[in-house]
Amino acid sequence: MRIRQAEVSRCQPRTSVARALLIAILATISASVAAQTVPAGDSNAALEAAIAAATVEDAAIGPPATLAYANRPIVQLRLSLLGRTPGERVAAGRVMLDRLVDDGVTGPVQTRDIGAGVSLDVAGRRILAITPADVDVLAGETPATVAAAAAQRLQVALNEVTESRRPWELLIGSLEALLASIIFVGLVWVLWKGRRSVSWRIADAAERRLHATKIGNAEFVRAARLIEFVHRSIDALLWALGLFLGYSWLTFVLRRFPYTRPWGEALRAFLLGQLSTAAEAILEALPGLFTVLVIFLITRFVVHLVQLLFQSVEDGRISLPGMYPETAQATRKLMTVSLWLFAVTIAYPYLPGSNSDAFKGMSVFVGLIVSLGSSGIVSQVMSGFTLTYSRALRVGDFVAIGDIEGTVTQVGTLSTKLTTPTSDDVTIPNAVVVSQTVTNYSRLAETSGVFVPTEITIGYDAPWRQVEALLLLAAARSAGVRREPAPRVRQASLEDAYVRYSLQFCLEDPAQRRDTLAIVHANILDAFNEYGVQITSPNYEADPDRPKLVPRDQWFAAPAAPTGPGARDDSET
Image (cartoon, rainbow, N blue to C red; front, top):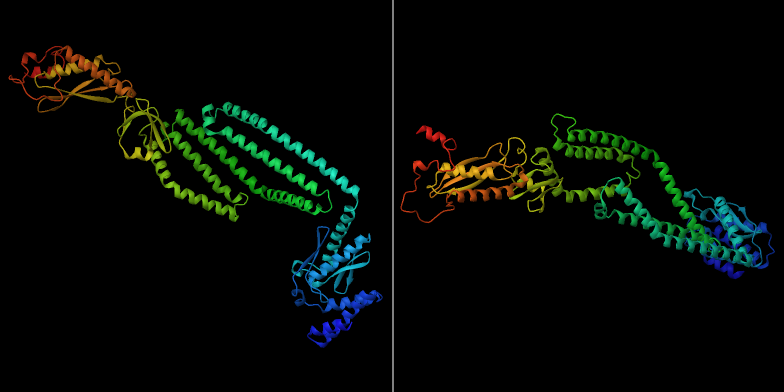
């Protein structure tokens, strides 16, 4: 007893009153522990005095410690009381519980007020005391509420300790865990074996559905890898189901045994908490989702009306001022995209999580990507609009873009596709098309006709009337040359050694431009050879001795006639 008093005297309390109080408390506690003959009222009085003398500064002497028993956290202590740190108080309480369990005492767990604190007792024996400095006042805790919750947890822990010492209950738990494991393995085996079958059946059904809706043919489905996407989606769904089964199995097995039951309960609480949070989020988002759905339905209805209107213009069933059939399709697409963008802008505030930092960060990221990669795309798109609304060309026209000739097969948003006479598929960016000269051979071919020129040079000794007649004869013999408007011959220029003649004619099919020109050239050669007229182009080195003149009696050499080319000149003479 003198040793304890000496130790207390070395603590040097702030005042002599506090020193005397602590000495009295220690003396009381020591006497009660040694002889256990001091009445309980005196011990409680000493503890009440110690709790009353404890201050907030005393709680900062040692780090907090948590009393855990049977793998369950019971209560956290923060105060150093009667010279014991929180860790020492927790250790003493755990030793007391072990002694009680060894003696077969597992309840009842009760709480008892001790001045400003609360005592946690088991079968009337004090385990530890909870003081005001042990609770989190800012969180609204009081010693009474903390002690009540600790008593409930401690009773559960003591019951589980009793359960763990009953072999038949452990055997039952093992059998339940074994049965759950067998069921889990069976379900996983069924999922693994049925994965391929289910995947292929759903993929085949999706492919048949795509063909039935005429979204695309088999080549389109393969190119778009839609079936592979369906397979991947089914695999992901089955993997998610397998993980859920594994999580449920682990939770169930852990809860079969007393020691691992807290872990199983924690896993179950986590899953239920997440599901509860998700359900609450869905319920909170329902009004906004309903508004988004209404906006979507209204926009879809308006888009359908716009598509019907412009489809009628494209088919020629109705006519709108400033709208042409060849521009109706592009206008329809532009209006559709504009309406959906407008709908997204209106619906954005009602989307769940639209005000969250993650959603805002994703929006900034997408905007940055679009800004960095859209300069070239915007240029192509605007060039495509220029081509469409200028009506420079349309699908099916035979055109020349720069030095490339071909039939237009597609006027897209980003590029224009041509099929050349040699069956080459040429893709030209719209910006390139706009920057070059586009010659459309088909636009006036069905009305006034587009004249195609071909040139030949003949010496001055050949009558020009005869040359014109031969050229017109060759055009008349050529298939693919229109009779109306009739072919015509022009003397393009008078060169140093020859005359340049130009035969101009209209094609029945502008797409057959090269083939028709080849036929006309062949007939020109045949006609000139047939009538003995020499083609001197491109040039010759020397003239014969006689002058390069055409006698008057040869002006109408066959097959020329006075009523044909040159008749006006004869009447003048």
